[in-house]
Amino acid sequence: MSDNQLTEFIERYLDGSMTAEERVQFELLRKNDAAVESKVTEHIKFIGLLKQYGERLELENRLNVIHAEIDVHALKEEVMIHPVWIVRMWRNHHSKISVAASVMIFAVLSILIVTGKLSNDRSKYEELSQKINSLKTEVGHIGAGGHPSIVKPKTVKTPPANFRGTGFALTSNGYLVTDYHVIKNADSVYVQNAAGESFHAKVIYTEPQYDLAILQINDSTFKNLGPVPYNLKKAESDLGENVYTWGYPGDNVVFSAGSLSSAAGYSNDTTEYQVSLPVNPGNSGGPLLDEKGNVIGIITARQTQMAGASFAKKSAYLLKTIQNIPTDSLSKTLNLNNKNMLAGLSRKQQLKKLKNYVFMVKVYNQ
Amino acid sequence: MNKDLKASAPTDSEIVLGILNNSEVVLKRLYTTYFPMILQLIINNNGDEDDAKDIYQEAIIVLYNKIKGGDFELNSKLKTYIYSVCRRLWLKRLSQMNRYGGDIRDFEEHLPVEEEIDNHSERDIQFGKMESALQLLGEPCKTIMEDFYIKNRSMQEICERFGYTNADNAKTQKYKCLQRLKKLFFQQK
Image (cartoon, rainbow over all chains, first blue to last red):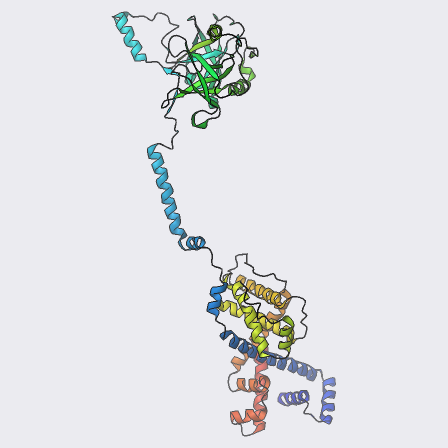
């Protein structure tokens, strides 16, 4: 039996056009001949697939006809999620926007650098250590002596200082506090009391962030000061408090009084008070006392463009600085006085007591 | 987004019945009802309207065959089913094109439909083979095959169309063509 004949038989068998007799014969053949049987199943499967393929094509055509009736373009507009204009703008123009922004940032930065705004804007802030005009002193010497070659320094111990500030005693055994900016770059430091006696002092600790420095008098001629009459106030003081300071803007001790005007210092520096108090270069490091004689701060600076506005570091930061001193820097004990012996005294009596505890700090460097 | 879709949307059982009864009207309503949803999915996920058409028609065919196959159970909404199938198909397409960013913007809830899509693509491969086998077969065999087996035309008609004087000649020709078609189909990998 040829392939064609077999196929014909299969088809006739499947579409039911065989006679009953043929059918019985064919079924017998299927049963007995595995090759015929597999041909039959293969044919059924293949023709089935062919028919399904045809159906698929027809369905696709039907769907295409339906699809052609839909206005896809209008629909597309409707269902498209339009990003907000700013996102669209960014997507379309982000490179241009980036360039523009970079140029802007560059321009702003250059302007700031050129005008000096970016550098530390402390131009209006004057630290109050006094630079002594050495040239003037020399001229003075020459004028007084007449012959420069024969002028001799009167004492080796007290050459004219390069910088001057104020300091005050923390303890009776010779610990003092002053401003860091007074003693920075110092080669040697001397302190001079109200009686005009100079003692050599050593910087034992500095806290540049608070502009504070702790000195220790280490001079053989130094005698114990006696109990310190004031104490350091731990709490913050109230605005409007009457305050005064005591320092060495010149060769003699000068008193100046005012009141506490702000709880924040220059550029809102909360480590400082603002005080309305006339101070001058040389007052740096001086104690700021309230009416009862508590030390509430240390004079640090004044504002050049505002008359009478000065700044004082709050005493709390001095206490903090004292706590930060490493114990091996302390050759003697540093016990702060807790007893205030000035309270209740009149201003004049307070000053008399203070006199021996406030020092002129003289700084020498190359 | 779907505001005007719901008004005319046919119910799910209407659709299933309509497809079983070969209703052209129902097929059209089904098609037009859910196309906007799929267009929205595709064009907002890196596709264009032609992609949407391809994907949507594929999904409709999957649904159609499932209903026709009689194993369709309405255990989810048709809408969700269609969306899920399209979403799966589109993800597959995107990763084939290396355009898949690992993230798809969804508009509807969806179900896992991997299995059905695998069945569907298996059958698609068979159809692809059949298509190219028919192309290779050439005329007049191709038309004879299509007329007889797909369009169910009688041998009589086919004889007249191709000018065969003898029905036996035509029959012999048909069997030869079928033989070749089978050969071409099974040769392909």
